[in-house]
Amino acid sequence: MRRTVFNEDHEAFRETIRDFIAAEVVPYYDEWREAGAVPRGFYKKLGELGVFGIEVPEEYGGAGQSSFKFQAVITEECARAGVSFGGSSVHTALCLPYLLAYANEEQKQRWLPGFVSGDMMTAIAMTEPGTGSDLAGMTTTAKLSQDGTHYVLNGAKTFITGGVQADRVIVCARTAPATPEDRRGGISLLAVDTASEGYAVGRKLEKLGLHASDTAELSFTDVKVPVEDLLGEEGKAFGYLGQNLPQERLGIAVSAYAQSAAAVEFAKAYVLDRTVFGKTVASFQNTKFVLADCRAEVDAMQAVVDRALDAHDAGELTAADAASAKLFTTERAAVVIDKCLQLHGGYGYMMEYPVARLYADTRVSRIYGGTSEVMRSIIAKSMGL
Image (cartoon, rainbow, N blue to C red; front, side, top):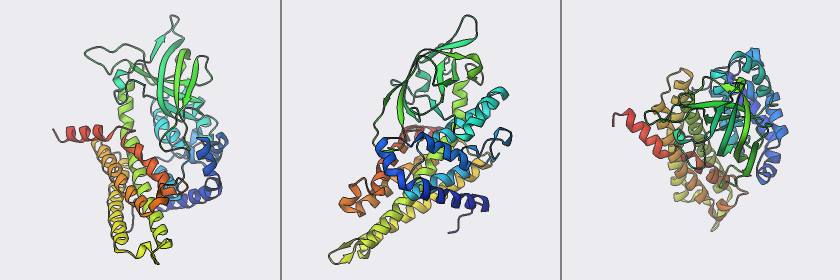
């Protein structure tokens, strides 16, 4: 079926991204996976290409586009090639919405030009070692100094994608203690300069997948954060975080669909080429039926994702809609990619084959951005249950 979710501008952008990936990513990707991160200079190339400025207003050096579909195109093309842009998806899909929505004019002038060029890479630090999905239970604190000029930040964060290379990290911290009546109050966002004294990057975490994306532990010991780096209003961060979650979960849904579609293509190419008992693997009825099932699953995922992308651009994507899209696509992606790996036989277990990397990379999609169990709770609540 013909897709109608993308227009001519999106498709022209797709060709640009596809060519860029072929020239600037594919030849070096195995090295990046071994290193556990993309080179810092690669982000400058993405900046020069305009990837970081798509949704940034023109007065700050961006293109001023409001559509999230350009980010979806990038996700689809990376999956198609079996690669990633490292931690840059956090920079654009997670951090940028907070800067656009809550930064004041002075902060936008100070941060956004570097954000667009790739000179200032960002990450966001929410999760703590002992809290997981319970953000209200965070213990990192930011106490206002007696003279009111700065906050003193203390605590630790973990699972921070892009945390090794980030220049500024949006840190969620308690500026006031929780109360029995309101556990969610008192949390603020601070855009912390990673060159600050007392700011430290701990372990670079070894993950099951996403090996070209750096993930780190962070610690803060009496880090002085100027009050000018408070993002939004003090104590309002929990509400801010909730407002961006639908887009974050939509991005994960797009990735799950794109990875599934890519896995089917990788499996199809493999079974057409691989010979067993004197015949191609593709000639066996079981192979045909498995890939037919996978194709039907991918078609269903695409329909869900495309509807959600249209709803998001129209400002109509609800928290329950995004949770439903994420739950469906990530759960089905696990099934599809597993079947595609199985069709590769023993080679599917080898990391040199992209289907093996997809298998490892997609597992986290049922965890980050809210676990599948959390998604089910959101959906059930929206049903009045």
